[in-house]
Image (cartoon, rainbow, N blue to C red; front, side, top):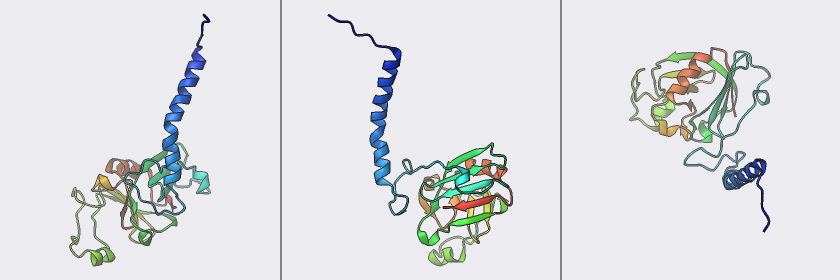
Length: 197
């Protein structure tokens, strides 16, 4: 009868391969189910679509910090001017291509406990919307903070309904969980560059 010896290295290696095999169907499913180029498929939850980004792929420098809003993976990425802080948050994105604007912009105004006033087009589509919702109201669609972009009516802001996070749910803005937007609000400034892809 021969004895079989197991080294710790062989045991760890076989365990890693087994775990990799268990994870593989999810990775394959993510690659086959989500096609960022088409931006057509909708998902119930944005779990498998997340992509990591490097700031150098989207910005020439980090002057005033940089924010990347990724409409495909429904995430917002922030890099501080000194490169020491890198944040990634899930967010809501525009509900259709009609509401989506892509390209370079910047933060033009920081608003603490912002008042929400529906745009003229929003009121045209839904006349039952209130004329305004004051800051501090828990039903305020802008949440607790808003950062206006140089494009009229486009903002990065908090949210009144966490179920919108990770979904195509906005009229053009990018919505973050209120604790996330509050933290980001303290890091950005007027002039922080923003790119929407």
